[in-house]
Image 1 (tube, rainbow, N blue to C red):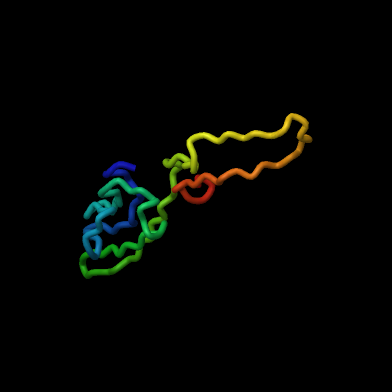
Image 2: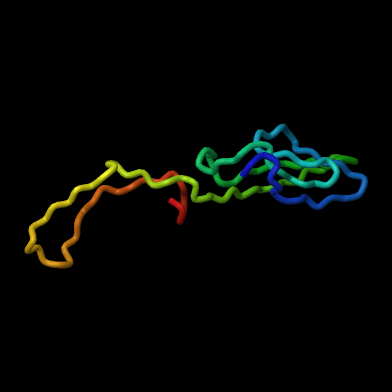
Length: 114
């Protein structure tokens, strides 16, 4: 998703301001509304994990809150085959139901998308 995509909103209290405990390359929080949004385009395949843990600090006094963001995988990568084309030859009188062993494609996506 592009930078600025809304991720969720942290429950807020009137008069409090909010910030992340440290600068985060992927996420930012609106200080007054608690809205969490992306700071950069996120590609699930480039992350070490599909879970991103953030610590949100509130003011007056400072209270830490842990926020866990689960990054879901989009089907944004095409399968890659070892060869661009496959030629299979067999005898004309080969019986039906014969199984062929072919090279397996790879896909950078995870889960059902991979």
